[in-house]
Length: 193
Image (cartoon, rainbow, N blue to C red; front, side):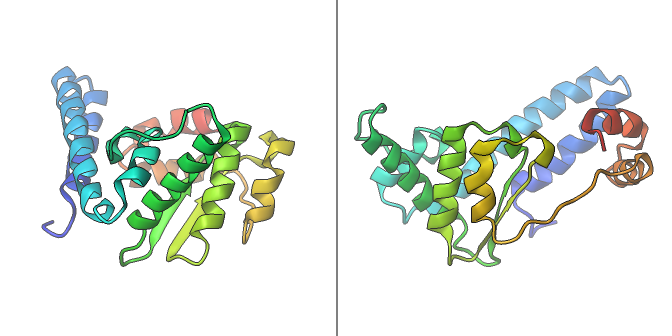
């Protein structure tokens, strides 16, 4: 499809190659690896246009965590409180630029039960800074695996939707729809529904 970004098309092609590789085609796995690398490069290139309006010093701060955004050297010492604040603000500027387009942006954060306190603090800051922008921040975590460190994140949630685990049949249905029907049992065991 001409309207899809090149990296989306490459990811779709890589998915087909990975399915072939699961059937034992070793060359398909190598081709998928090359295609995934090319898709990443293509994706990073798509970031350059929306980031063009972000001042270089904010991109440099964000690049401490996500080098692909570029922007030169960060100014603050990496161990200071000022450096942490500048990192957070740099990430906020970069994310705001990336989600400023139409349709509205989506930032999806998964498996937050594994996030450390520093990551949770950064996420809380970003959620606060992105408030009022055309972006949906969706976060997922296993409630039975989170601790007191996650309280601030739960409080900042506009809405909490509790989901139950999927049944074996539901995982099978989703796996089949994704072309992974042969791996349904494995996926169910790995994800615990």
